[in-house]
Amino acid sequence: MKKVLSLFLVALLAVTMLAGCGETTPPAAENTPAASNPAVEVPPADNGNDKLVVGFAQIGQESGWRDAETNDIMWYAAQNIDTIELHFADAQQKQENQINAIKAFIDMGVDVIGLPPVVSTGWDAIFAEANEAGIPIILVDRNIEGWEDMEGVTFIGSDVILEGQNAAEEIATLLGGSGNIVELQGTVGSSAANDRYKGFHDRIEEKYPDIKVLDSQSGDFTRAGGKQVMESFLKTYPGQIDAIYAHNDDMVLGAIEAIKEAGLRPGEDIKTVSCDGVRAIFEAMIAGEANVTVECSPLLAAQFFQAAQDLKDGKSLPKFIQADEDVYRRETAEADLPNRKY
Ligand code: GZL
Image: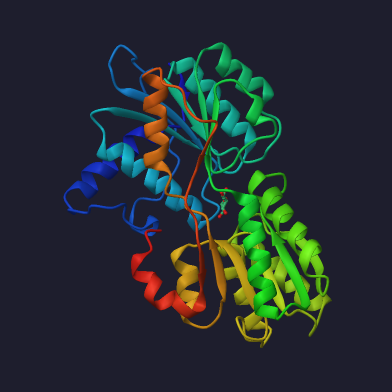
C-alpha cells in the first residue's frame, strides 16, 4: 500500500479537537496543531464513494502566510468531512517532494490535485502524467510557466504583478518620490517572487527615476532569511537605506529585528513595504515599526474546494479565479487588526 505523507488523519483530529470550541471561522494558524509531517498509511482513495477526493501537495511551513493557508484548507475539509476526503502532503519547500506527492495522488486515483508549486519550472512531466490519468490540477496561490496553455490546469490566486505595482506606489509615497531602497526577494524561481519583482521594478522604472534600488537578494520568504540579508545590507550600505521592499511580511519582520539591533528605528529611519497582510505585520504597524502591507489572501480553501467539486461534477472552470486583495497602512492598522482572519 502506498505510503504517502498525508495529514488526512491530522485533519480529522483537528475537527474533533476544534468542533467543541464552537468556532465559526478558522482559528489562527498558531492555535492549531502545526502541520507536522507524519508519514502515515492511508487507504487508496475509494472513488466508489461520492466524496470529493482531493490530494493537496503543500509547499511547507516557511511563513505565517503559508501556515494560514494550510490551516484554512484543513479547516474547510474538516468542516465538510462528510463530502470531502483530503489527502495532504507537506513538501518542506522541496519540489521533488511535491512531485512525489503528486505521483502518489495519481496512484491513489484522487479526483483532483491541488498545489502551490514551490518554483515555476520543472513540472511538465508530472503534469502530463496527471493529465494522462484524467486528473485535473488546480494551482493555488502560485503558478508555473505556460500554465495558461496547459489542458486541465486552473489557477486560483492573486494578481501578484499588481501587488508589486502597488508596493512601488506605496514606497514612492513614503519616500516622497526619491530615496534609496533595498529589496528582500522571495524564494528564487517562484512565481510569487518573479511577479512581485517584475511588478515593482517595472513601475519604479516607469514612474520614479529618483528611487534607487541599492541591492536585491532572496530571504526565501522566511523571517530568519529576511533578518540575515538585512544584517548584510546594513553593513554594506551604512546610513544609505531609506526603505525596504520585502516580498512577504515574514522577511520584513526579520529585517525589523536587524534594524533595531543596529540601533535604528524601523518604520521611521527605514520605512517598510511588504506583501501578505498577516496579523503580525499589523501588530508591527501598530507599534510604529512598519508602514504598509499589500494584502495577498491565503484563505482560498472555499474557492479551491468549490472549483474541485465543479471539476468532479464535470463542469468547466475559468483558467484564472482571482482572489480579492487590498493595501493596508499604519494609519488604520489598529482599526483593521480585529478584522484580520490570518
Ligand atoms: C504568495 C505566496 C507566498 C507568500 C509567502 O501567493 O505564494 O508564499 O507571499 C509564502 O509568505 O511563503
